[in-house]
Length: 241
Image (tube, rainbow, N blue to C red):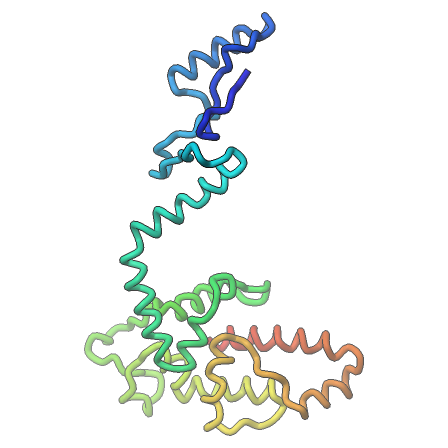
């Protein structure tokens, strides 16, 4: 009774098919609706402002794939200029150093992951931090935008990097995390070497002394322990950030 239109999207009533008498009222209703463009199964060409139509050279089995790509092509054309400016801004930020580069060289899936270990608020803070969108306003900032946390930070501008990495208080926090995870006391001057691992929440390989301790303590289950150790590292970095 219904025939697929040439565009592979719409369906119309097939007049050449003789329906049984009991279906005549339904056929008449469908035909009236078709004339009034009221068929539910007819795709509206203006929905979401996308031209939901497929060229004649697109086969029916490829119509859905073609339609799914239309929003991408539309955004690529209309948002191209704005996106180039945003991407250039993020690239400039990533070129500042390992801390920024490690943060920005992640996929959206990595940024939004929580692994049932951190809160939605912590996920949001990390995402906003990576994209340089975290609000740093505080009363009086328009007069003095230096760090207010410690007196020694008075001459340092309160940037995101300073708050989460270079501030002595942040460095002390990261030193404790690195010392605990590596199994050896880490000199404060060496903390900067781990900027990439800390910001990307990706641990560096376990040291030889730590691996020996793990094998003695856990034996054949050491691999499973390492998986959990990486999970703990990810959680600690998320909390510190």
